[in-house]
Amino acid sequence: MNTARILSIAAVAAFASIGAQAGELNGNLYGTDFEAHAQSVRNRADVRAEGQQALPNFAKGPVADYAARATSTLERTAVRSNAVIAARAHQIATGERS
Image (cartoon, rainbow, N blue to C red; front, top):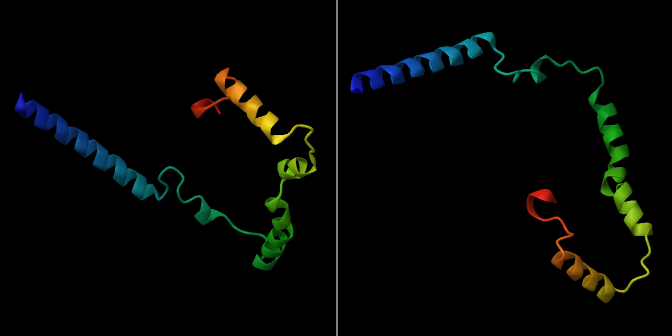
């Protein structure tokens, strides 16, 4: 029984090492060198300038703009009491569902 177990473990280890070497010989183990073959057609200054131009839009997105423009007709205490009622009625998603 021990001999069979040792031989099976050795066989699994041998197959694993052969598979690892095959991936290294190709130089492409699951597409990890994809970025190495990518060629840029734009220079660094253009990319940086575009990033600086887009930066203000990331600080506030459409959700933040909408929230800033929204006006509420309820007071804070009313919103809190509605939230407590909704939480007790299990109408607010929690955990994995949220």
